[in-house]
Image (tube, rainbow, N blue to C red):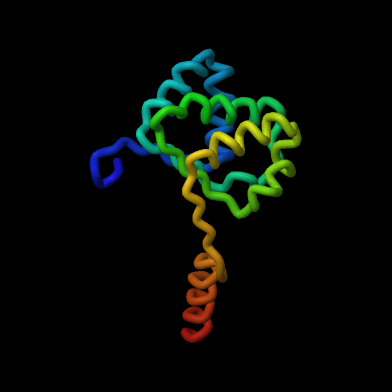
Length: 131
């Protein structure tokens, strides 16, 4: 739950796609889509880590389509939008997904070194100082 009482669903992209595949296999795909649609905010983390299959990008398109009309979606990615065709090779579907994500979007670009790297370095330095 968000602090203001809104329902929030957070998933890594790969986990979202695995859950969709499982729901499809179990015959609960439409119920799963309704659950995703019901959340006030969907956060999809790590989009673009690997290329999507035909079924995966169609499923992602369906998820975004269900969320149109007042539902917020946040997608985090390290892949610039001009390179999304690397993970969604179908030009038409790539454009449709991009349009759904960017039509009314606020784009935030974070630059600079990874904060994960800083934590790892600090831990390494701490361990080095203990010996």
